[in-house]
Length: 171
Image (cartoon, rainbow, N blue to C red; front, side):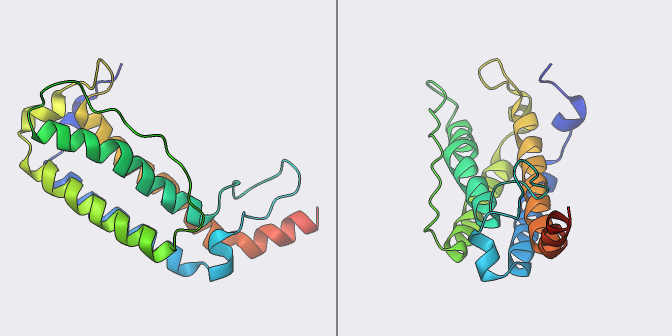
């Protein structure tokens, strides 16, 4: 169920490079959004929210909080052995006051550490299962997929805000 041979065949260098590419993508699309639109909820009309309900800021913050509070902890644990129980991951709490530049800098720093650890781990590590759940390789593939999911949401906010407002206003 949690095993995907192709995922486990990913080269550590490729995964690490994808982290860099993904971070650059987030930075580019954040730069496309105006300051006011970074923190505002996208246009919606009742339950009709074509761009979702999270701001671009919240999407970026979520990536940082999840990777720093889960992925990075697991990778650090794997680098040390792993010995002892898997680290307990933190609950994500959204901080709307955190400046977007600080979020992006912290995301870049987090991913640089993730990439460094990934390059150091023995290949067999990618086939380990996390507490009977997905393999480490699957988890890392999910990090990449998750980045593209939120990059897409941020891009849609940056690119389609005006069109969405007009569509919602015109019914």
